[in-house]
Length: 178
Image (cartoon, rainbow, N blue to C red; front, side, top):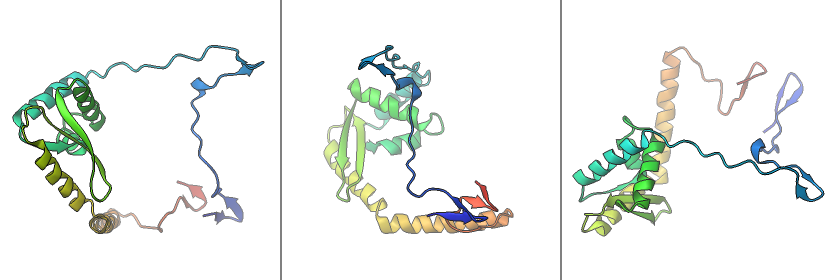
């Protein structure tokens, strides 16, 4: 949508946002690279990753008969580790074959990654039950209702704090972009 502000055309609805990493651009002359491509930047290993892996292994040892999905474990450990640390630790434990993992598509089309202890003797039924539960909680009618209710609660909280809602999808106020 194009908005008008003081008679000036603001914004371009057909604009495309392009994110370019300047380190990967190579200049070419006569069809050959004039300089070598910069080496790939390897970030140092996060110091919290190894403690997270140990905690996850302890968790799976304590819950051997259960099946969990990735986001569930990330939420369980979010007070201690950022979710990307937990995710990376789960991925490494899966690659090391310390825990078992499966990518599953639910009946409603949700893709979830399930994790369980290698000592779990019967993970298939538990994985099926968990997939069905994720589907029930991911129902579009339920999530839409929760979203509308949350929006209403946030509006009331903002009003109590002295803020006012100007309108939906607003990105400028008095010709100043937010």
